[in-house]
Amino acid sequence: MVQSSLGGNMAVRAAEFILLMVTTLLVLQSMSPAQNNGDGRSIRAIGAVGNRDLGCTRGLGSRYSLKAQLDTGRSHAQAMEATSKLITDPVITEYVNGIAQTLARNSDAKVRFTVKIIDSDQVNAFSLPGGFIFVDSGLILAADDEAELAAVISHEIAHVAACHGVQEMAGEEQTSSASMPLIFRLAARHVTMHAVDLPPAGSFESEADFLAVEYLYKAGYDPQALPSFFEKVNTIQREKPGSQALVSESPRQIAYRIERTQREINTLRPPASEYKLDTSDFQEIKVRLSEVEKRAQSAVGSPNPDQQSAARTLPDGSKGK
Ligand SMILES: [Zn+2]
Image (cartoon, rainbow, N blue to C red):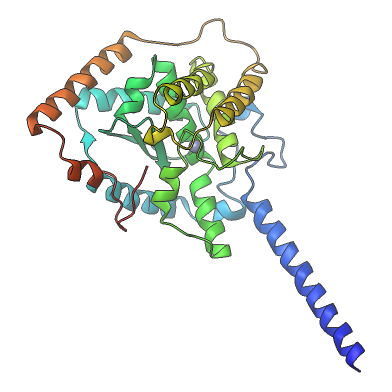
């Protein structure tokens, strides 16, 4: 009797275990980036850019309608803007938004993009569902040419095009594992990788890097700008060890991303005879941005430490990066 009962319990436990494993596998499968849509239009089909579903209308990505993505992104973007010091110079913002529109036209994204520039010396950028991108002025000043800035924006457009943010949100709703607000998580998952160790080959970051190369190529920018910017991150890290923005980025992680993106660039066919790398506009914008920042600083005197930290205090009181 006891034996039979134990056997019964074991059978129930085994069934529960199998059910748990199947559920976990289904969740993981639905969270993994789109490698192939089953109709041949995989993320490697560069000729199909713009006509591919990278995970927005199936699996976890389909849980949020385009309108829901826009509403979520907008409300988080408004909260971010309310607590950040933005660069509002129209020449600079129009220029950066122009780059985003060019890339968006050559992407899989179905939304309109708005780029806001945060007055900060961090080298960082992040995107929210619905097409809201934030770029730190420090990143623009760190870029050597327009293609490097485009590479960062392209990576952020890729996160939106493949609905990575909403897939994360839906996955966390399903597993109840959300440990911090969306905006903080997306800010943490910025262009400079924020993983504890190397990401799995199919992670959202890897996919965003992959798509960024495709979008740059299609938009006529030199895709080499992406690994080139990663090299820059490595250099900044070496020169400013412990730099707040880059503290999570190890040389090994950067080397891994450089190697992967380089491998992808080598497969691009046909290689363009001429890529857009830099423009005089970009160099003028950098000078203008430096002047705008200097004027803002001298207008308020020495930076107020309270204001500086408030700039990245999120609505829930946590600190963004
Ligand atoms: Zn990213």
